Length: 312
Ligand SMILES: NC(=O)c1ccc[n+]([C@@H]2O[C@H](COP(=O)([O-])OP(=O)(O)OC[C@H]3O[C@@H](n4cnc5c(N)ncnc54)[C@H](OP(=O)(O)O)[C@@H]3O)[C@@H](O)[C@H]2O)c1
Image (cartoon, rainbow, N blue to C red; front, side, top):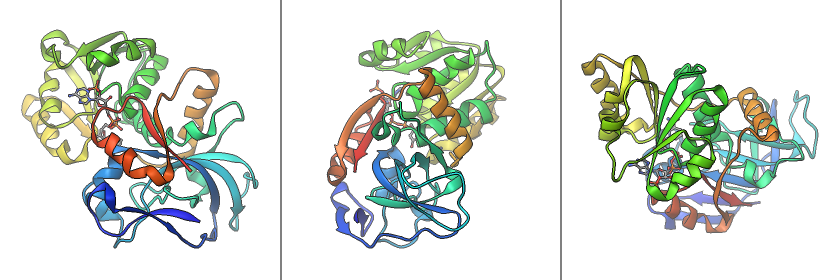
């Protein structure tokens, strides 16, 4: 099978297509024939030696944590799935996911079945960002109907799904994005969009119950001023989480850091919303697997609208 391998941490040119033996599923595992894999900022951060690199072991590595495909074969003890079933999942994060390949192994409880009415290629871009949005809003952030949520980087992979999930929950949603993405976000249901390049969110927005901070760093620190007393900021970029949490403590408010975790049951709930038309994955680009370097470069630009997907 074809796989994209990283022999040493570094630039996108380090990603190389190679032929590998197909792995055999062990107990509780499923071998999947992949149709797509999603690309996320954690992929290139890890490729550079940051991000999830400490969890990967020694190179060569196969990157990629989310995928969609069909079941090729089942390991011992797997029940409720059959050869040919359409599935997607966030695999093993932050341990190796190995989704940049024609086939990969997955633990059954990290997968969810995909209905025939859902585009399977697009589904490869849902699990990581979708579960991040779900866990940040509903588990860490405990978002309730009627609350106000501010979403930073609302047009990105996590943000555009978080906007829709927060609206589905009955919250008032404010997002930050450059002007070119305002119409996109309004169509997804965002009640108000702040043009962060020309407007000061801290001057315009007050008294939010929850911040979903997709930016971190000084931006994540500054927006703490928008929280109402007792409000919470959930900050996503792990490298700046300590800085944001410390600043929140100094201001007498709360900030939390989260790390997305695989969860087949939550993924099934996300897919049910997709099937009902309540959640839509916006696809920025679909790139052939062999052109993964181009997909990384696009993600690194910081301008992704929705998700980048590799077609296997
Ligand atoms: N902790 C976790 O488990 C976890 C999970 C997922 C993601 N993350 C992290 O969360 C962050 C967001 O992830 P993602 O996948 O959503 O990223 P992404 O898709 O690459 O985000 C791209 C978006 O960021 C927006 N953006 C860039 N600069 C901005 C600014 N100053 N203010 C507002 N928006 C801005 C861009 O909108 P414009 O073009 O309109 O500027 C673009 O739409 C990343 O750092 C990622 O590593 C963490």
